[in-house]
Length: 192
Image (cartoon, rainbow, N blue to C red; front, side, top):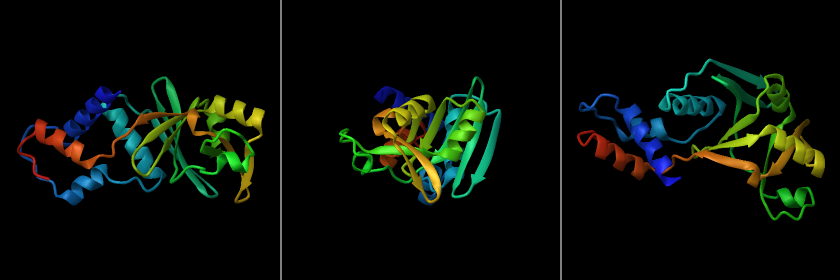
């Protein structure tokens, strides 16, 4: 897994500096490229850069705004994903639903799930502020909520919840120093 993360970081370095020429970025410009994700648009942009690294074209990207939620429906060859942004997880998940899992949880809004079913999305991608991307299988989420009744009303809308163990981490790019080191290895003249 670490080798995969290193390859991803190296590809990011190559995307930042596509030509092996002297290029100077301020620390502020660099942090904007790898900084904290603040909303669903930035989450979708991060996913687009991730797909670009692996040369996977994005066929279509729709931004959907519903009540308190903004999310994206993004289509790549053979897959359609729901991309949503979440600041935090549900840290009292087991207490709220009176479960003995001793685990934190996460959830998706019912409106997001309606779009996922409409567009035949099998996976929702949850992007955190620290640029971590998690995949959540929608069918597993629905099966779990059906079996354990982990649906609750929140802000006048329904939220479907599951334990964090249902999430699969796809991408973590948080260490500024490590990315900086790899860029310096690839392009020693780059100043940050």
